[in-house]
Amino acid sequence: MAALHAGAFDGATRWSAVAFAATLAEPGAFAVAAPGGFAVGRVTLDEAELLTLVVAPAQRRRGRARTLLGDFAAAARERGARTAFLEVAADNGAARALYDASGWREVGRRRGYYGGTDALILVTSF
Image (cartoon, rainbow, N blue to C red):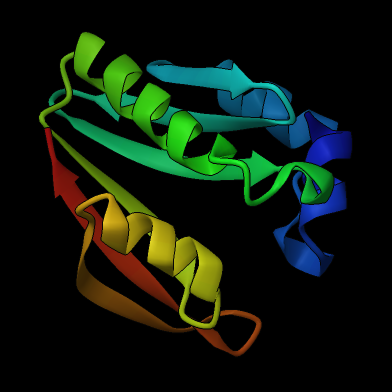
C-alpha cells in the first residue's frame, strides 16, 4: 500500500507502511481495493471518514477511483455509517471533479493544511 501511495502522491502527503499498519489497526478502520488502487477509511458510530483514495498513475482515467469511492461507501454503510467526510486539496482538480460528480459537497476549509494549500472538507450522506 505504501509503495502504491508513494507513486501516486508526493512529499508529506505520502503514507509510510508504518502509517498504514497503524491506521488499519485502529477500531473501525477498513480498506477496499480494486486493480491498481485502494481506499482506506474508518467508521465511528454513524460517521465515516475517507482517509485516502489512491489510484496508480498508469491506471487513472479508467473509472477505478469511482469504483473505489462506491466500494468505500458500501463498506461504510455496512458498518453503520450514514454520512461520510473527507479532506481534499483545493488544487486537486481531478479529485474534486470525482467527488462533485459523486454528490459530495463542501462544508468547510482548512487554510494551508497541505503545505500552504487549503484542504476542503467534503461530506456526503448515504
